[in-house]
Amino acid sequence: MTASTTRPVLGIALEPFGWHPAAFAEVGADPLEATSAEHWVGLARSAEAAAADFATFEDSFTLTARDRLTGRFDATLLAARVAPSTARIGLVPTVTATHTEPFHASKAVATLDHVSGGRAGVLPATTGRGEDAALFGRKEPQDRRSRNREAHEYITVLRDLWDSWEDDAVIKDAATGRYIDRERLHYIDFEGEHFSVKGPSITPRPPQGRPVIVVRVADAESETLAHAADVAILASGTDEELGATAVRLRAAGVPRVLADVTVHLADSERTALRRIDKLDRREPYVDDARVYAGTGEGLVDLIAGWRSVGLDGARLRPGVNAVDLPRLRDAFAPLLPGAAGTGTFREILGLERPVSRFAVKGA
Image (cartoon, rainbow, N blue to C red; front, side, top):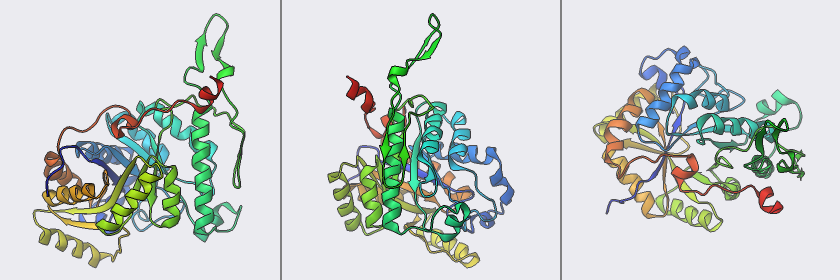
């Protein structure tokens, strides 16, 4: 296989101690470590050192196997805390679109974009769990199709609210005592099946115009939702299936398509598989994505193979942070062509900065 001369798009999915639920025990970590901001700043800096273009932060209303001992921070607030301590990496918190309000999410992600200097994204997720619905008491659990229709509206409202301030709405005119030109703020007047939002936002337009929308594709319904995304992450499939999905998504206008892969790195495949076996004996775990066990060179080849069938790169999920993040830095990143991207998250992804649709309408 001929190595690509262009750099793949790479994300790293951060969890408290790694993607495997037994990761904390593997390295003898104290679960309370994950409750400190310094722990997460260290993880984000490690992802940055490993040449990732962005890091994702998981979130959910109820605890998962990976965070039941540590609890979980609000992902958007966590990303905002990490932002001033990182220099280059995109920051993508998960926001659960089911049961929450897009108005609040839009201003939180816009704030993250301001705090980070234009490095924010957001990964809208959905939930059909009865336990989650019970926490809110507003509605019964929804089926997958209903949840994804709601999430599609959610994404539309996010973008409309980010557009509701034109870029030059803040004028700071001391002579007249005006901070904003209210003629450059706009009602979005959104009316949908699940949301009714008047607007405008209460936060100025983000530096990127619209922060990057990331959607994880795990089935046909979420593939449809990904049509509204800037980046689609494919959960699983053979190389042929991934390539076919990428073709469909690009035809629908999705600019960047990545594959999800949980990574266990070692000096050999045999050693990496023994690590996984040890983790599974401590706590059995069935992954919902491709699992890679092997060397940094092999991981480079795997991603190159995905690129040959039409993908742009991958989101890497370290099995055990303490082991796999250093190996991603030392045994994987140096093998990549070129240098890691800089600038806003949209610039790193090669995406244009959109003009507010209300400004275009006004013009």
